[in-house]
Image (cartoon, rainbow, N blue to C red; front, top):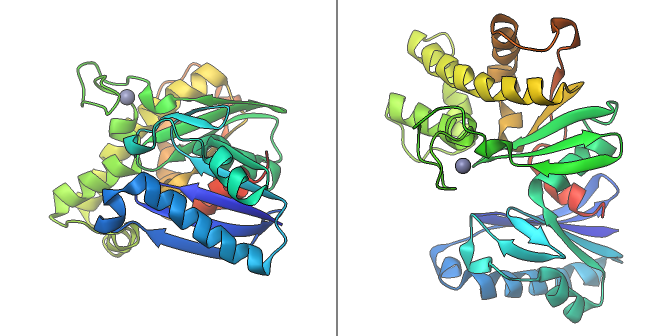
Amino acid sequence: MKIGIDIGGSHIALSVIDEKIIIEKIEYVYDTNFKQNICENIVEYLKKTIHNILEKYEIEMIGISLAGYIKNNILLHSPNLPELNGINFADILFEEFSIRTCVNVDSLCAAKAERKYGSIKDYSKGVFLVIGTGIGGVTFDNDYMSVSEYGHMVIQKDGKLCRCGKLGCFETYGSMKAFKESIEKNFGIENHSGKLIRTYLRENIQNTKVQEVIDNYIDEFCLGLSNIIDINMPEVIGFGGSFSYYEDILLEKIEQKLQEMPLFIDRNIMPKLVMGQFQNDAGMIGATLF
Ligand SMILES: [Zn+2]
């Protein structure tokens, strides 16, 4: 058995994993106190929780999935939690437990899980996008996989300011964060969880204003997606992250929009669009595949 860990901007999740099956999952949402000294608190939380897990299970490896630029297990740049810049979780945990530990980018971890066991396992060439706060991506061709920052492709000159400093990046229009903000702004609802937003949309899906807001999001999303399709000519595009909870609300509209808009590639080789099978658990499962 292995331990898969997902360290996010607002929560942390640890799972005991047997290949693709999650045997036990422990989650923690950071509170204000925890955030005050987040780096030390995360380390302490991980050590304590892993000690508890080791009392019950035989663990052969620990895999960590997180957002940022990572080299040799060192998190060099963390966009969500800058306090973690420079940290090497692999060394810290190996010193404590003497268990092999690997740290990798969340989008690569998620794509690995979907590639080995999930939604994109039957395709040889494609793209997997992890859409949540931002848009991360992985481009794959048989066994080759590489992280691609599609979220920071500019789709609007002098557009919205992105956290990377550029204007008009794809993720400022196409991320789930952007979609959620637009729903909140247009319908006067604040601080809703993703689940409540989806319930609201499903209950009001016939409402003209709701359809208009969704269609606006789809227009901008498909502008970015069409670039990815024309550049890569993929057989498949998989969607992970919280986006994968919106299949019934978004997928058909995206397919329809792509049919209507001009594209360079031949319509006969349009990629298949699929939702990730493991949704937000993909990162944890994939983290154990290194
Ligand atoms: Zn950007």
